[in-house]
Amino acid sequence: MSDVFRDPDAGWAAALIIILPLVILATGELEERLRQRDSALQRPVEIIRTWVLPLFAIWSLARVIGSADNAVIKLVGSGLVLALGIAGLAALAIVIGWIEAQTSDGRRPIPRLVLAMPRLVLILTIGWVLIAGVWNVDLSAALTALGVTSLVVSFALQDTLGGIASGFTLLADQPFKPGDWIRADDVEGRVVDTNWRSCRVQTRDGDLVIVPNGALAGATITNFDEPARLHRVVVPVQVAYVNSPTNAKEMLLAAARATPGVLTEPPPNAVVIQVDDPLMGYEVQMWIDDYTIAPRVKSDFGSLVWYHSHRHNVPLPSPAQDLFLWDGERSSADDVRSRGSILEGLRRSSLLDQLDDEQLDDLANAATWSRFASGETILLPSSDDIILIEDGTARILVHLDTAEQPVLDLMPGDVAAILDPATTKGREQSVVAISDCDVMTLRAEVAAGVISRSPELNTALDQIQTSRTRRVHRVLKRLALEAAAAEASTLIAAGDADGDDETTDAETGDDDAVSDDEDGAS
Image 1 (tube, rainbow, N blue to C red):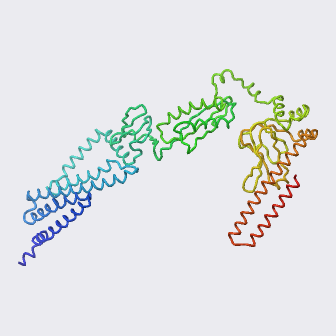
Image 2 (cartoon, rainbow, N blue to C red):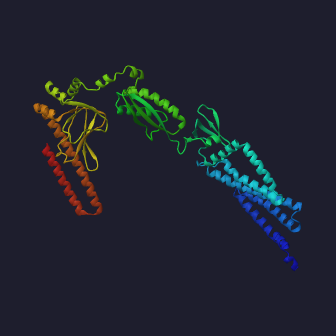
Image 3 (cartoon, rainbow, N blue to C red):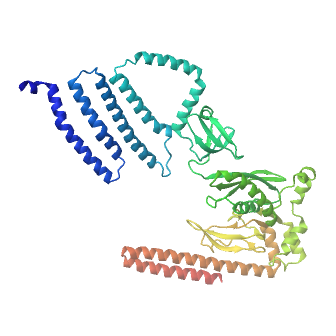
């Protein structure tokens, strides 16, 4: 009896007889619970309970009873290895399915070849265990022959193998995925499919182009769908030189906004890229969210430019006429305002129409004509000249510490002049164009002489000065009240009642001061 307990094989057999049934029962209970939960793990657990554990028990007992070289033991061992391999493949399929589900919500999918690699490794491992471990077959000679054969095949199929290697690189790097619109050297289109050997691309013509992965690996690839589908379409346009840049840009942007497929955010943009009489070159930048419509957007935009140029009175260039009939010297002379044209512009002003011909002649001799773009400064604080707005709108601004405060908008026929600095309490002033403006500058010394000889004009200018002074006072008063109210709110929030009273007194004092200034100016 004691010999039985000293025998390790007998102890191993006893352990199998006692422990293995318990493991089978526990595995059966686990399988039932997984089945009730409809879990994917039920299949691997079922294979382990039905095949792996019984085969393991038979193989273990056979090893105790018989020799390891017995054919029956090798067959049972082969079945055990295959059962383990099948269970492992079933578990691996569950893991791969979970990974594919995680990447199906818009993330970049993992290539199928990468997901197939674990299966391939597991199958090769099972085969190696069966041949070398169970059947004790020496694989060294076979591996040597396989190495020599692989070397010969590699030289013969180096281009093909290079394409396969490139395919692995592309699948690992994933510069694009099926559905993306790409450009690789001379090929442009939508990716239909990718595999380990080639990539299939459908072009705009509807043709299917098969590009080897070796060619793709050495090409510069542009992916129009990554990292976002947002794409900028740039269209160069030439406009006649006679059009002001502001009007030309407004016309081009109106055509861009009306083009189907162009996004409003980011908004279209137009920039000047060429200034060359008789043409000016512009570049219109439009944003779309689908690169495939880029040719249609360019075509629709070009058509709309023609219509908008007529509606906005912005003529497009006529190449034949500009090339053969344009006279640069005559065109330059036409850009200079004649004396008669300046006189006509002065007479259109309701302020100056009361002057006689001699006085208008004096102003015309001293007047210069200029054109200003929107946003440009027409009159600086240091200028004493008088500006007559002939066409367009401008604005008088008072410069505060942190911002510019608008005072008055000037219309065609109005006169722009810097107010007395005492009126604005020493704050700087300027006149800025709101839109494109045609202005005539009247030199200060000549204008002063004409004004001194015309009581009516002198009175009208005094009234304008008084009205603008009152407007400035109202603006400064409002700003003082707003500042005092803000300060009072701060003190009230801090709980300082005395400071609140002082603020109220200061506010009243400012009001009185502003009112005194206004009364004096009136």
